[in-house]
Length: 208
Ligand code: AP5
Image (cartoon, rainbow, N blue to C red; front, side, top):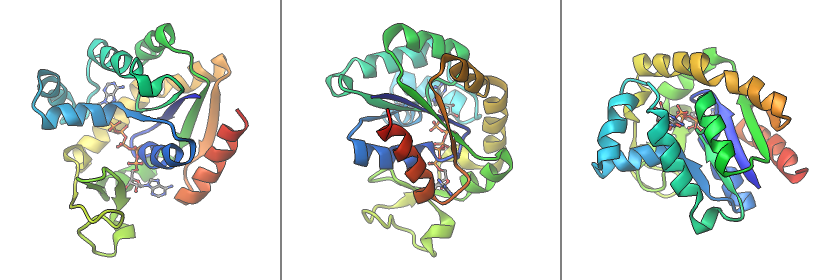
């Protein structure tokens, strides 16, 4: 199964990807995580990506497409994968079609007005990468799953989140129509509890 997770920043792509990965054994390919790893390791790609990510803008299509093409060519993606955060532009979607066939695009749909609060309240684990909302943590400073230290992503401040949401509306939302026309789009109501959202995701994937 080759799956794409579409959805605005904070809609729950990473959260659902982690559950899908556990249940269906698919490798989770997140372009955001790949860029952040490069930033941590201070690679030339990381230096370039940081200048865009810190402002809430998209990284250039050519470097992003190359990075994804290399990743999907690896052995662990041969039997399927879960793409999280890619494609994000029409150019990326068209480039993707040239090297793989996508079976299903899950659009996690949450009203944009709710996402600022979700993202500014997000805490991520530096050890296992899982993310939580402060409301779930009851004041804990460590990851409930593995005990790792929690941190706030640099692009989760109010101003940058607003930019990311604007970029989503102007450059990514159009992909909903694109994949609806291609017949691969499945809309998931993401404005519910995480387990309820996952129950729908599971239903769709089991029917594929
Ligand atoms: P990326 O890391 O992909 O960020 P994003 O798309 O903005 O998405 P997020 O990771 O912020 O949110 P999410 O949908 O995964 O939500 P999550 O599950 O964490 O990209 C970062 C940057 O990298 C981009 O801005 C861009 O610069 C660059 N980039 C990446 N891909 C690129 C590309 N293809 N082209 C160019 N540039 C690219 O959940 C969010 C919060 O909500 C958490 O606290 C979570 O606990 C909570 N939550 C989740 N589900 C629920 C629920 N059902 N109810 C209540 N709370 C929930």
